[in-house]
Length: 400
Image 1 (cartoon, rainbow, N blue to C red):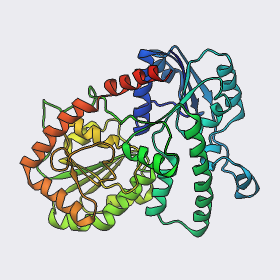
Image 2 (cartoon, rainbow, N blue to C red; image 1 turned 90 degrees about the vertical axis):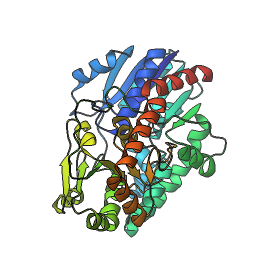
Image 3 (cartoon, one colour; image 1 turned 90 degrees about the horizontal axis):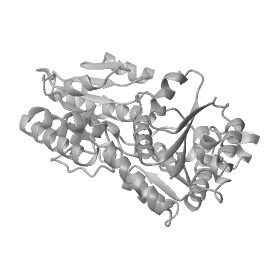
Image 4 (cartoon, rainbow, N blue to C red; image 1 turned 60 degrees about the horizontal axis):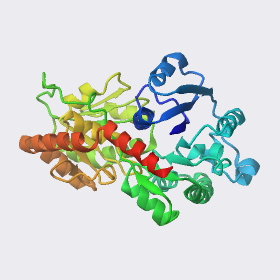
């Protein structure tokens, strides 16, 4: 098939979870089908070097210059605009004209979009060419979970209520127009069917891991004598910020009291001041962005995933499993992965239980060994990107 793939960003280098998903799915689709790739490119991106990466497997690659507009003021522009504000923020007339020309050429059997924000570019062409949408998260679900866990001012709440209403209508519009919604986990599918449209065509395609890159180091054990745990992720992303806020407010004091020699590594790019401040606490190191996260996975005895805001699945968990670092997570953090507590992962949803499970794993080497071996087994059996991507590419053939 001839497929036009459109992304709202260039997913390279692979330094974000969403980039890993979108890059590897694109690569596998392009090995099975004839793909023209179009991506929005912000001015500070180095285009030539990045283009060559995608030209290795795509038939054509085009980066479109893109600059986010100013956020609309509530009145009159935002209030009178039927588009949700987060969708409007990705619209640009020059890009719309370019995509119109591509689609109207009649060259494509299908259009593959990345996320809800791109739908306005294709919705008007829905009678000419079918489109599918791969969703790194379900926007309405994500925003509602943020509302439950983050304190907002009265003004912010009013703006969000306006956004929720528009998003709900737009989610329904997507459900009726798209050939397929592709989501990361069964909870995303359940949310869409329960809260948006029970007949929405939803397919679960779980996140995976590059098994050639994330693998155990068989040469040298890098774990030190003192116990250590890590948390990995973008440190300006609200679910990660909220996770660490809960951890340091409700878990940290109990944990450090029971394991005084514990080292805590916070690894990830763009730490906001709130995250940087945790580095002043006993045993805590905030690294900021690192060129390679694997040494930190291999150094840590455990990875913690204290997430309270869900949607999608956690690449940090499948990376940890593939490299052999056991995981302690909330149920929300591990949703969609279908991992067994006590065998492939440890799950805990309140502060006391999270402390207990973490301490148990730190003190019990046999348990860590079981979690490591079973985690490696499930990662290799279920979470390799080639197998995941090939299943999606084959599914596309059944849709058309």
